[in-house]
Length: 59
Image (cartoon, rainbow, N blue to C red):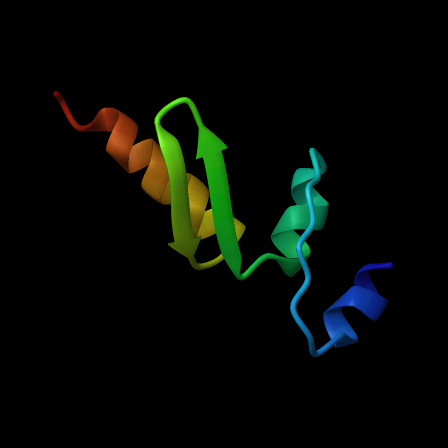
């Protein structure tokens, strides 16, 4: 499945709890949370890193 989706040249929207699957394909993350919708351009690993950095910033 990953190979077929990786070869697909169009836009793909998917929802998954499988972090490995998301990491292998995602180049943009749209997060919907209680704070609203955030649009992140980058890999899943970059998204997680930036989320962790934001959590460490004192309010």
